[in-house]
Image (cartoon, rainbow, N blue to C red):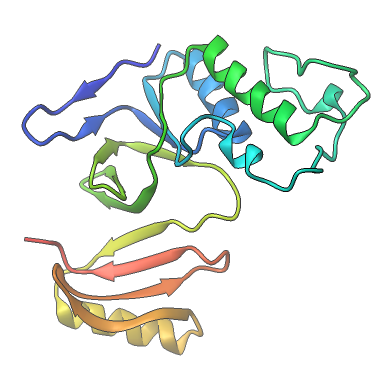
Length: 200
């Protein structure tokens, strides 16, 4: 069972594993974490579990039959050789989360992810901070930002020159933000890689 451990002074939410995304991949991961007795917390940008499916085009169905579309421990209701609609699958995910007793904070979009002193800090778009030694990021079509902290402005510039010369795509040229000198590159999947100095 996941236990809420918060730092009352900073408001930081702490857990052993933070699972970002409460879709099928995130819920399956949470199921395994719970079986292993690992403390975890899930966050999802949607207002409710399954919203990413509910908001897709009306005639969408799964591409695989129910017999191989179920998550561990709970069969997907209906004809095993039939194909669930998007709304059926959304309802199934919500039920899976409830039956499994997974603690999920919905309406929480993670806008940045950084690592300091062996701990990941995920920052939500409204400023909440979640800290965990391990992070599982699930979902498709989303871009997350991973921060690389370097010592000083000169190190930012050196890394920019090295990555640029290696052909790494640059989304944001070096500039000075409120937290210091920074630039943003893209990995091969289009995720943002922010290089910056520590915010003192």
